[in-house]
Length: 288
Ligand code: UTP
Image (cartoon, rainbow, N blue to C red; front, side, top):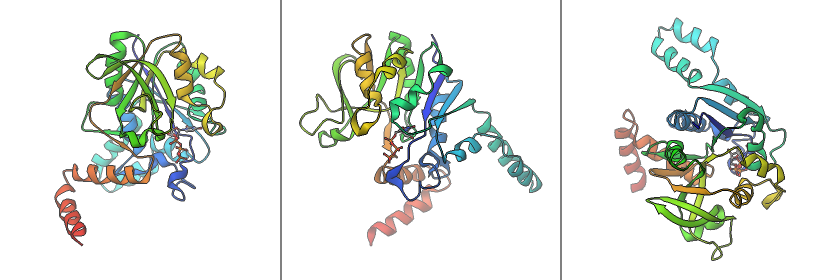
C-alpha cells in the first residue's frame, strides 16, 4: 500500500530555544530563508506524500498561516510588480493537502502521533520531525519509503552516533540484512552511557503501519512523564518486524542551538547567492 500521509508533530514547547520560542514556534526558525518546517514538508513531498497532518498546539498559528494563502502579501507584491514572488508564495500553499489537529497539552511525541489516528485511518503513514534536517541526500522519508515498499513493515530512520551521545537518543540494535538496513530487536529510550545496545540512534523519520496506534493507546507515560513513541515501537516490535535504515546525507539536529547554528552555516555555504561573500566573512571572523 502506498504511503500517502505524513504526521508532523509541532506541538512541543521548544524549551531549548527559549526565549525565542516563548511566543513563536521552534519549527518556524529559518535556515537561511526557509523555516525548518518547510524543509520537513519538502522531505515528505519528495517521498510522494500527498497529505500533511500537523499536530499543533497553542502558539503555533504561524505554521498554519505559512502554509495558507496570504491575500494581503500577494496584493502588495503584485502592486510592486513582483509576480515571481507571488508565484513562489502561492507554491507553498499548494505543496500538499494540509490538515491541522490540536494536541491540547504536550504530553509527549507518542501522545502527539496518536492524535492523528482518525485522520490517518487504516493505512501506513510517515512521521517527520522538523528538528532533524537532512542535507545533500535523498529525502529521508523517501529513503524509508523505499525500504517499506520492499518489506511492507514499519521502518525507522537511524544514524550512527558517537557512543558519548547515546543518552540523548532512542537507541536500537538488530541484525544487518542489506546495506544500511537492519531488522531491529532492541529499543531503549535514552540509555545511560555504556549501557546502550549499540550506537544506532533513532532520528526524526519513521514509516509506521497503522498498528502503532494500538500500541500508543496502551503506552503509559515513561521518561519525563511523557508518552514516548520509542516505548510504543518497542511493544509493536514484539508483534511485527520493524526495520531500521541508516540515512544517506548529512543530518543536523536543529532542536538544539549548536546543531541549528551548524545547519545555518552549512546551508548558507550552499546557497548560490550567499556562499562567496559568506565564506569570505567566516574566514575573517575565524581568524580573530
Ligand atoms: P522535542 O523532544 O524536541 O521537544 O520534540 P520540544 O518541546 O520540541 O523541544 P524542547 O526539548 O523542549 O527544547 C520533538 C518533536 O515532537 C514534537 C515537537 O514539537 C518536536 O517537533 N512534540 C513533542 C509534540 O508535538 N508534542 C509533544 O508533546 C512533544
